[in-house]
Image (tube, helix red, strand yellow):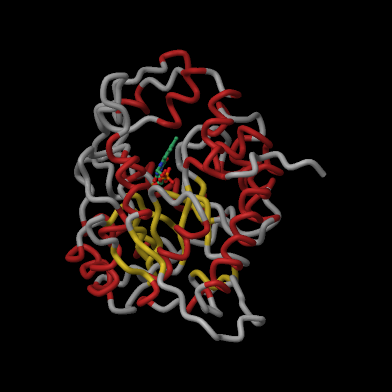
Length: 343
Ligand SMILES: Cc1cc2nc3c(=O)[nH]c(=O)nc-3n(C[C@H](O)[C@H](O)[C@H](O)COP(=O)(O)O)c2cc1C
């Protein structure tokens, strides 16, 4: 079968851009304060920060038994990569979130489905052949939030990924009025009153494990561990919320120290290769999540494109693990990651 994606994954975005309408591309690529004059500060910092970490291989290890498989909240996945929740996937491909979920399942991993998906949580759950996690945005109306949680639970979603880095929306100046997001794009449905107490209230009601997405400060990570949260996502929302924010590759190590194994850590933002995934594992993540890359893959090939992307990442990770003497994705040594010195 002819590959759906470009040979080099660094070409993924450029190829998707050719295929998408100008406004769809602008929406997916967008970031806080991005405009024609000053494009995408934080997303680029995210990508560069991973590249600023060198890999320091171990040698003379029998690596025939290498395994990319790991567990997230007890669920076995074939590779330590998951799909970050991204809103409104239908502008990338008609298969939308259902396609992404099917692609992830086929590759043996999990997709996290956004509250703001193009398709309903029902439709996506039906389309997927395996488990999914649900990303939660709360609403000022707490009854509506509770209903949303109960519905995700009854549909069989396995975990609640609580996004906490969006008490308000961010200034986005690119503009894509044709997509017709209205209140969603301006963040009018978000809840600025969201705090630890509200998180605990929802967690107590939900019978699902809670993961907090959007943690960048080690104090917040420690707080989450203390409050019985099962996992955190070190994330700056792909640079779409606060510009000038710390890149996740920089935040991760300190957070892993603060958490000291009390909860699972995932990370997203600028993960663009299997080497980036390996860097994330070395710095303490259990899995790396990808946002825009799955949107680009979906645009180029629907569910099959997403599966191809994940399969490629799995094969390339396997290779990178063998070349760094690492046998298990859930036990990558921290000392294979070294901060780049001054050139
Ligand atoms: C188009 C788009 C929509 C997004 N929508 C959501 C969302 O609904 N909920 C959420 O928690 N994060 C959302 N995010 C953030 C992603 O979950 C993730 O944190 C980010 O994309 C990771 O960075 P990356 O795109 O560089 O991989 C969105 C990101 C993009 C690009």
